[in-house]
Image: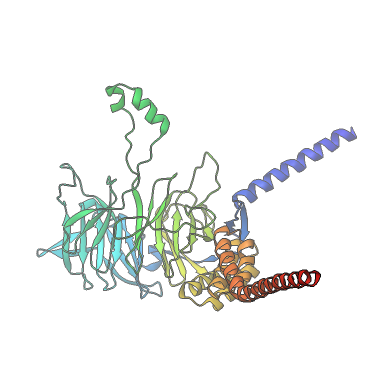
Length: 487
C-alpha cells in the first residue's frame, strides 16, 4: 500500500514537471495579464527576459470619435509622429497626431473634376514631403496625393512585355524611395516587387524569391504522364508579404517562404544583403510544434541604426533584430488579455514605442518601452554610431538586468574590439559563443603580441646567434693554439 502511494506521488510529480517544462519551452506563462518576454540562447533554448515593452493604451475609432474601424489593414507613422490608419472596410484613411488625437479623415479626392473614392485599400505609404500613396486594391490602382491631398497621378493597368496579357493589377503594399520610384507588392506576382518610375511607368521586377522545390514532388513529376503533371503543384517562387524602406533606400521585406529566408534586405539590384550573424537566421520563432509550424511574418518595420522588427501573425509576436541579425527581444501574443491580439496585421514605431494594428478587433495597441528595452535599444544605437564606450556601458547595464542575454556579451566584445582591447574582447566573445569574432580578436591580439615582443625576441635571438658564432670562433682559435704548442 505504501509503495503504491509512492508510485502515485512520483506520477503526479512527473506530470507537474512535464507541464512546467512545456510552459518553459514555449514561454507561454502569463502574469497579471502581461505577456512574458523571452529570447533564444546559443543552444536554441527559450530563456526568460524582462519585458522590453508594456501595453499602455488601446485605441479604436469609436473612442477617437471617428466611428468604429472596420477591418483596418495598414499603418504608417511619419518622421514627425503623424499616424495614418488605413481603415480598409470603411474605405478611408484616419490621420492621428502625435498625441493620438484625430487630425483628419481622407475618404475621397477630386479626379477630372469629379469626386473619386477608394475601394478596400490595403496599403499606405507617406513620403518625407507628406505625399500620400495608397494601394487602392479594390479599384486595381495606386493613388498618389500631394500634401494638400490633391491628386498627383493614378497608376492603373500597367503595360509591359514582362507582364502577361491577362494580368490584373491588384496592389496591396507600397513604398517609395527618395527618387520617387515606387515599389509595389501585388497579388499573384511571384517575380518580386513591381518597380515604377516617378512618372508611374512600370519598369521591372526586383528581388524575386527563389523557387522552393520539394524533392518528392519533383520525383513524381519526372515519372508522371503529361496529364498527371498538369494537375500537380507548380514550382513557383513564394510571394512577399510586406515591405518597408530605410533612410538609405534599402528595401526590407518579409515573404511566405516558411522554410527559406523569410526576411530580406534588398539593394538596388534586388540582391539580398541582410546580415545573418546571430545564433539563428532571423525568421521569428525557432522553436515550435510540428502541428503549429514556423512563424508567419506579415509586416516589417525598419527603425534607425539598422534595427528592424517583424510581426508574426500566427502567434501575435513582435521580434526585433539588430543589424547583424541578433534577436534583441520578443513581446506580444494572441489572446484576450491586455497586450495580446486577435488578428495582428501591421506594426509601426512611434518614437521608441510601438503601435500594433489588430484587423479583426479594429484596434491599435500602444506599447511603451521599458527601461530594459530602452537600454538595449540605446546600446545598439551607440555601437552603430561608433560610441564604443557608451555601448559597453549600456550593454553591461542590459546584462545586469538580464543575465540570459548572450548577444549583449557579443556587443560588449565588438565595442572592445573597436577600441583595440583585444584580450578583453576575447573573453566576452567566449561568453557569447561568438566564434567568428573570437577568431578575429585572437588574430589581432596575436599581431599585437608579436608587435610588442618581436623586437625584443629578435634582438635576443641575434645576440644569442652572435654569441654562438663568437664562441665557435674562439674554440677554433684555441684548438689552433693548442696544436701549435704541441708541435
